Every structure is written in structure tokens, then in C-alpha cells.
Length: 346
Image (tube, rainbow, N blue to C red; front, side, top):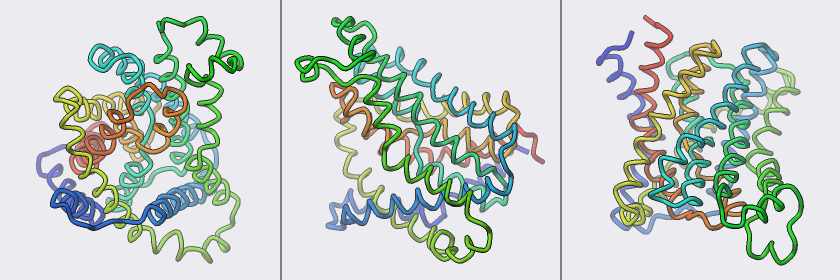
């Protein structure tokens, strides 16, 4: 039942989680200009480890449950969500940010943050609410539609539409390739071969194939270390977020407001689709959180290739410095409480 007391209880439990506190520590360290640094190679290793772990665990769970109607509906809902979100965000931002940058923001917010997903899974585990392993596949499936729609929106109505259309349908000429962004083939290839997606889906496949006995042998790696590594990784993200605050202040109040307003709007859309697809409480919560999140790793990497004229200095800090901390500190407890009400949990 949705009450202020239950909301406060979940918010307190989430806020006092070690990984949230380490994120705060990173932000504070950056603001006081501490010389604390996480080596880039180690940060990259931690990111890969977290993707491996969530993928492998998802594969194990999917092996237990199998492919069901609910799993197919969850993946389909995630892809529909990823397609629709950029379509409504783009016209809201186009006038203020320009066509290319608005399309970049739309694609970023239509995509998904793996770390926010992991934080949501952690909250589910803390509250002992089950979810399906297929939600890992649903998360990965959210990357592609948003990127494709974002690229199309960036090209829509451009002065050289004919040349752009030619680049999308076939290889552009060598002269045009120096002047124009890459076509949809390039962004799709970048998305499919992106290291994060390959590791995530590959780990899920390995977990799906591995039997329970062999999986237990590697449990110290993917089970015992998980929360400790997550704390260290959130510390690094806190440092990055803190260092980007000045850059966001220069972007102006409109960009700052969008970074805080878009997550709950997207969450409502995700919740509506989850109910429409008749997902379980746990899966519905995860879809709601995925809808509210924004990608600051996979999507920007693809956008830099596909739409280089879009300002990464806008859409990356929006996702990482505004939306990410908003979701993990405020959003998750609120989405949890709203989902309890939506699924009529007493």
C-alpha cells in the first residue's frame, strides 16, 4: 500500500545503501577538489565485471524459468518503450537545443543505463521481490531502437536530405563521408558490436547454458564480489558526476530542468507499458526504472559516430550528472512505491 511511511522506509533503505553512500563520497571528493582518482583501466574493468555479473545471473535465472509469454512480452515492451521515448522527447527539446543535439538527448533517454538497472535489481533483492532473468535481455534490447530513431530524427528535415537518405540506404561516396555523419548501418553495427552489449548478452548466454553445479563453482566471482565492486564503481561515477557540475551549469536552466523532469515522465510511460503487457510486479518495476534511466556509456559511443554534430557535452552530463543520481537517490524509492500501488501490494 502506498503511504508516506512506506515511501520513507524504502527511501531510507536505498539512501543508506553502501553503493549510494560511495556515490555521495565521490561527488563530495570532486567538489572539494580532492586528488582522489580511479585509474581508467580499473574503472573499465569494474564496468565489464558488473555487466558480466548481471548478464550471467540473468542467464541462470532465465534457464530456471525458460522462455515464456511473459518474457517475450517484457522484451517487446522494452523495445516499444525505446522507440516511443525519443519520439516525444525530440520535439520538446528541438527548439532549445537544435535538431542534432535534441536527437542525441532523445536517443540517450530512450536507451538505458546498465548501472541504474543493477541498482534496481539490488533493491529488488533487498526487498525480496523476484524478477525474471529475461529482463537482462529486455535491457539490452532497449539500446537499438532508441539509437535508430535518434539518428533518423537528427537527419529529418536536414538541408541535404537526399544525400542523407542515400547514406542510409547504401554506402555514401568517399567525399560525402568526410562531410556527413555515418548512416544507420554504421550505428546499428556499432550498437550490436558494442563491447557492453556483447559482454552482457554473451554472459547471459553462458549463464543460460551453464548447469547449476558448474555455476556454483564460480559463485565467489559473480556473487560474493558483486556489491563490493558496485560500491567502488559508484565511487568513480560520483567523481565523474561531481567534475561535470560546472559544465552543466553553463548549459543553462532548461537543460538542468530536462535532466530532472524526463526521468519521471519516462517512468510513467514504462509503468503504463508494464501494466499493458501484464508483467509481474518485479518485472514491471524494472521496466519502469529502465524507462526512467538514460544511457551514458553505450548510446553516446554510438552517437559520436552516427551524429557527430550533436553536442556530447550536453547529453552525456545530462544523463550522468543529473538523471543518474536523481534516479538512484530519489527515483528508485518513488518508482518502487508507485509500483506497489499499481500492483496493489498490501
